[in-house]
Structure formats: C-alpha cells, structure tokens
Amino acid sequence: AQRVTQPEKLLSVFKGAPVELKCNYSYSGSPELFWYVQYSRQRLQLLLRHISRESIKGFTADLNKGETSFHLKKPFAQEEDSAMYYCALEREYGNKLVFGAGTILRVKS
Amino acid sequence: NAGVMQNPRHLVRRRGQEARLRCSPMKGHSHVYWYRQLPEEGLKFMVYLQKENIIDESGMPKERFSAEFPKEGPSILRIQQVVRGDSAAYFCASSPRQAGGDSPLHFGNGTRLTVT
Image 1 (tube, each protein chain N blue to C red):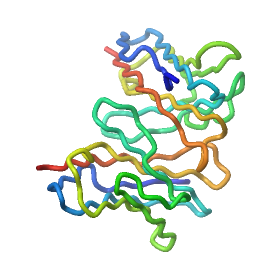
Image 2: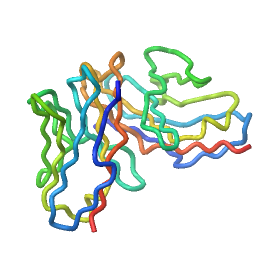
Image 3: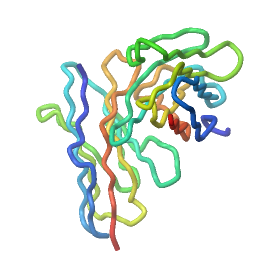
C-alpha cells in the first residue's frame, strides 16, 4: 500500500534560517510527488510538484528514489512561510492522492 | 471563478442524525474528490467521482457513508446515523481531468462536522 510519512508534526525555525520539511514515501512503482500548503484561514493549495522541477516561493524539493524521500527545502525562512505543509503521492496509474499527516512550520522573528 | 465551494462550513449534528455535505466544483471541473481529516491526522482519501459515476470509493467506510455527483447540482457526501467518531473536517477537491501532475487538485475550505 502507498504511504506518505511526515515525521515532524511541528517545525519551528527562526527567520532567515534554513528549512527542511521531511517527507518519505513507500510505493513500489514510479510515483508523482507533490507538496501542498495551507496558510492560516486559507484553503489547501498546491505548492509544487516534482515533475515540474520548479522553485516556488523559494522552496524546492528533489525526489530521491533511493531514499524514497521528497523533502521540501528553503535556504532562508520567512515569516510568511508559516503554514501547514502536506506531502502527497499519486500512484503511477492512480487517480487519487495519498497525503501525509502534515507538518506545521512556524517561522519566528 | 469562485473556486471549489463547500457548505456548510460548520455542521453540528446529534448522534443518530444525518449529515449532508455539499461541494460545488470549480467551473469546468468534472472530477470531484472527498477527503476526511480526523483530529491530529492527515487528509485521508474517501471517494472519487465524475458526473453521475463513482470511480473509486476505496476510502469510504462500508456503512452509513455515501456520495453522489449528479448531472446537475453539487456533489453530496451523506453520512447517516452519525456517531462521535465521524467528527472531522471534510474536504472536497476538484480537477478538470483525472488528478495528477498536470491536473492538480483545487480544494474547498472544508466542512467541519461536530457530532454531539
């Protein structure tokens, strides 16, 4: 069965510090991986997906098939990055996303 | 485009009553997904529907839960004879095609169900 693990419920960093939100997955095929973000009082929205290999709001994520990880990184955290972050996996021929439990990122000034 | 609209935002039901949650997808989207978020847990897939068809209901509890997406009108998630364990946030998402890399999900604000 597919599974997405986000080991940290809460990650607290100071403004300007590097951020790494961990995500590990288990899936035997070739998954598509996503990061979704939910800012306070807003709806869940797509942040980035591994196939596009893009940087959004300074965040990047690299799919590491050997370690089955898709960690989200940003070199310098900003206060407006404070939010709930969800890692999600879509199966190769699937039609639904499997989400991790989410990590709350708090950026302190 | 108003985005995915869910109503009500908050719903309180007594044990044994029925709960009906509505979801209007984004304009032009014909694929709807329902997710449930229990306290302290992540989003759990429940059901995937296209107009008039249930495509995947592998995440739906076997009893008391049903979903539909009629030709006209919103998608409805129905919970009969609610119990306290049904208290959760229920999220609806839509996409223009089967969700995936080029067709990300667009989420509603969710309905928070409280069973007393």
